Amino acid sequence: MNLESPPLHDPCAVAFLIDPSIFEYRLMRVEVETGSQMFSGATVCDIYNYQDKKNRKKNVHVCLEMNTERFWEMVMKSLVKANTLSPANK
Image 1 (cartoon, helix red, strand yellow):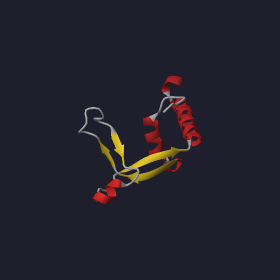
Image 2 (cartoon, rainbow, N blue to C red):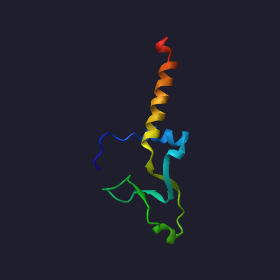
Image 3 (cartoon, helix red, strand yellow):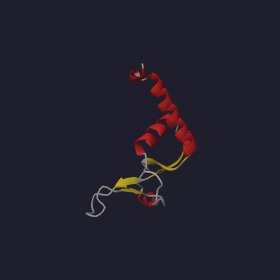
Image 4 (cartoon, one colour):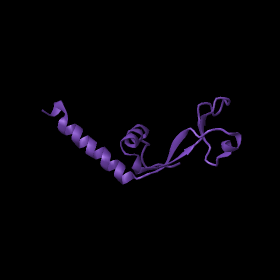
């Protein structure tokens, strides 16, 4: 994956809590790999629903797409408001 900028996982999580409509997401089975030395701690998403055949319930909403324009509008609006309300600016 070649990204122009670093990922912003925490702000994206907060944005999802504020307005989930800016994300496209899907419920799927997600597990954490614990039995491999090479991939220990990696999250594994069952995007093809293989676990359904084993009656393993889907347990996580995984975000697949984000409306980045609306995300950055939200971030910038929050920063402007925080700057306006900051006691450091009084």
